[in-house]
Length: 453
Image (cartoon, rainbow, N blue to C red):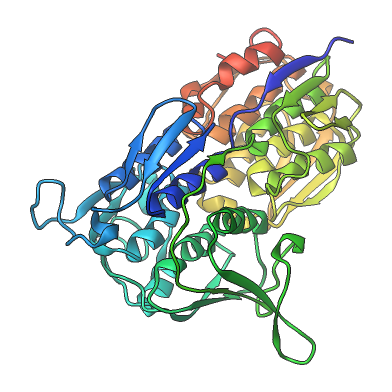
C-alpha cells in the first residue's frame, strides 16, 4: 500500500514563545522556521507596536529586542509621540492576548489590549489579578476581567503570586515569560483543583532555558519543604505542591529553529488512520515536549497502526474501537479525536476539558452539533464528550453543510468526515489560516475527492 507523505507545519505554540523571547533579548536573534499564520502575524505586530524590530517574512525572522520601545523604558506613548496607549490588537488569538498581557505588564508604559468580538468574551481576569499583586494596574473598558482593557505598567515588583491552570495554562506561561523582567524574584504557586495543559507550560520553560533564564521548579516534599525538581521529568503539576521560582535576569540572544506542530499534524495522522492509505508526517519529533504528541497514544489505543522514526511518524488504517481519554494535557486534539471516535466501533468518552467552552468558540458544543448533523450519536458531559461510534458506515453519506464557527480546529477536524463518504461543505474553510494556512494544499494530498468545499 503506497504511503502518502506530508511535511508538518511549524509549531504554533513554539513560534509564539520563540518570537516573544527573542523580542525580550538584548540584541538580534534569529528564529528559523517560525509558522507563517494569522495568529503568529498578530503576535509579531503586537511586539513591533511595543518596540521590537522584526525583519523577514519567510522561514527566517531576525528579531531585535526592545532597546528603544516601551518595554525598554519608554513612556507609554504611541509611535507618533502622543500620550495615548500603545495599541495592542490581538484579533482572535488567545495565545497572543494572554502571553503578551503579562509581558507588557512587565514593561513601562500604557497599553490598550483589544481584539475581535469573541476575544472580548474570553477571560483574563485571573491573570490580571496576579499581575496587579506585582504592581500593574488594569482598567476594564467593557466587561470586567475580559478585553478590552488598558494596562498601566511600571514594571513588576517581584514577590509571590498564585495562579491556576483550570481556565488556561497560558496564564502561567505569560507570568513565567514576564517574571525575569521583574525587579525581584517572582514565585508563582499553582492553585485550583487540577492542572490542565501542562505540556504547554513545559514548552514555555524550554524556551526560557534556551535563553538562559534562571529559574527553578520546586515541589513540596513529604516533610513540607520545597525542593527543586527536574522540570522535564514532570508529566503534570499538582496544585498546592508545585511552584516556580524565577530570578531577575536578561534573556540571552539565541538562534531558534521551530519544530513541527503536533496539533496540526494530528489531522494528517488521523487521515492515515481513517482513510484508505497510510499517511507519513515528516518534521514531527517523537520526543517532543508538545502535549499533542499524545495523538500517537490515542490513535494507537483506538487500534490504528503507528510507526515512528527519527524524521517522522506514520499512521495507517485499521478498524478503530472506542476509548476513554482524559485529554486535559492535550485539549487541542479533542476535535480530531471526536471525529475519529465517530468512525470507531463502541463508546468513546473524552474528559478533562471543560475549558474548551471558552476557546475560539465553544468547542464541545460545536463538535456535538456538527457531528450530530453527520449522523453521529454524541452528547456533551460536564467534562467533555461522549460519542457512540458505529463505524464509518454509521455516518450520513452525501452532502452535509457544516459550521466551523470561525474556528480553525473545528474546520480541519470536520474535514476528516470525507473518509466516511460525507460531502463536507464548510461555511468558512479559510478560517484554517489562523494556524495552518497551507492546510488545504496538504489536505489535497490525503483526502478523498470532495473533502474541502
